[in-house]
Amino acid sequence: MRIAITGGTGFVGRHLARTLAQQGYEVVIIARGHDQRDRSIQALPGASFVVTDVSDEEQLANAFSGCDGVAHCAGINREIGRQTYQRVHVERTRAVINAARKAGVRKLAFLSFLRARPNCGSAYHESKWAAEELVRTSEIPYHFIGKTVWSFIGGNL
Image (cartoon, rainbow, N blue to C red; front, side, top):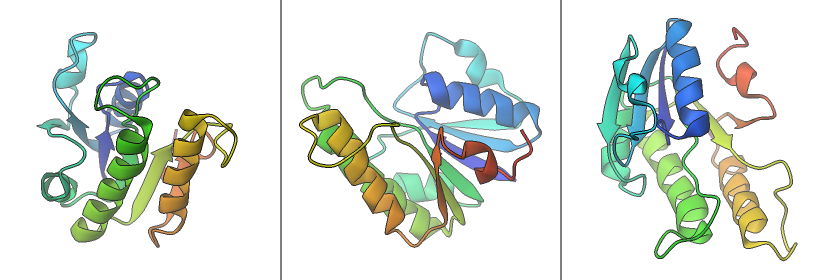
């Protein structure tokens, strides 16, 4: 089974990649660049690394080609410059969904946040909720990571 992971060098993404690789999955690690905090992620058996911005639907669709599932872990915990919650959580989730459709991906997992909700006064929580809504209406079978991530990959972990 081949799984793509956006934000694959981030905290959750790299741990998920390592776990999946140890279980024998083929992993496509997608990130803006090589994260220097953990260089061992680049040497995982059965893993490939794709450097791309998660907003580029064509590059994502190419990276997702042949993947059974996508774990969308790319996100931010604070806004800096052009890296806003709206852009990163909502617009890039839309790009991931569109690319997954183009590539024929059969499953989608999304790293949300336990307290994601609308109209709560927190731009972070509201953006995660908006992204969840995009995933819910995508017509791609999905799970929210942290809630049912292991069922996403068949419950083998």
